[in-house]
Image 1 (cartoon, rainbow, N blue to C red):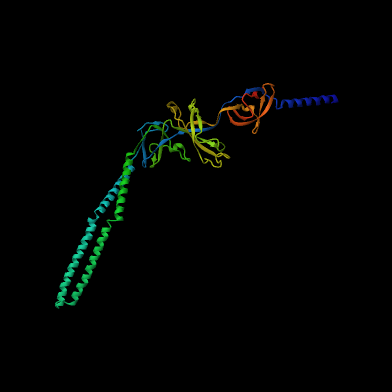
Image 2: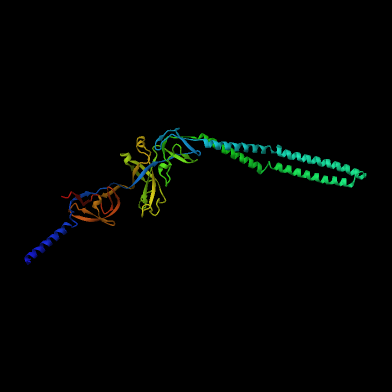
Length: 427
């Protein structure tokens, strides 16, 4: 190759290099798109910022329906998720086991009542009567022995009986006196058994037996469980380790006294629960207003407010989601109209938009009009007299889906300029 050809080759390569740099320069659009200049005169307007979460519709306040005693479900009169009317039969429990317990309680009550009656008439009862007769008999024998001893002493003084016979009568007298003392002590002990702690114990046992029998009698009347108010029957809270359906009560299921069969939630009184990450906790507060929408009730926007924010993470240390601790929040929906309550059902998914900021008048610009980043953010402002553009440093406030709030650096009536990239299909 000669020198002239080599020179032309170098010039061509240099031209291609410059063309490539121009094509990829920041001021040029990428292949497949073009930029258009946009202008806007900023004026104060209402501005809100919100944060969105995904949650679940749940029942609000309600009455827990519990089993009154241990037994087996014989009949069911409701289905979870369906409305119930006041007085509607919800469940019927088998009373065979309860009847056996009631018979045992009645037997214990009758025994306790008899024991209490014995204590009330203890002083004239058989045990005290026997002790009293024993005392009288011992006293009679003592008196008889004393009389015989006196006669024997008279005969001894006259020399008609031997000294040994008199000594025998003296020994018998001592024995009789001991017998009288013993009988008196036995009668005192028998009388004490009918007073003090023993009487109190009998009264307490009677009271306990009476209360136990009353409870079982009352449980008999609760064998048929009915709804007190109108509402919607929802499932009891599921165990964390169990499937929700495993908590359902059905015919033939075994229930324990106090077991929650379901919750009769008031119709139209609903709540929504949702999870929030630790970075968003500081943005929420109690009483904060929100709006709830969902695919299951399209076209409805249900207002509400935050009632509770968990004080402890549901996954401390971000176990379920590494690096992120999750907190649970609960919000109550405003009372629903009848037509709304008919469309919104417990268990539906919900989209929650929590209003975190609200300004009646704010200067708001499109996000693409802001250059740089906080704290060095700029906006291109056009001078209306000269037509020249200059960069103005601005302070950014809240950021929302419809724009960026400018706290300082702009004033009402300023014209801002920016370029929007419009993509189009590559040829």
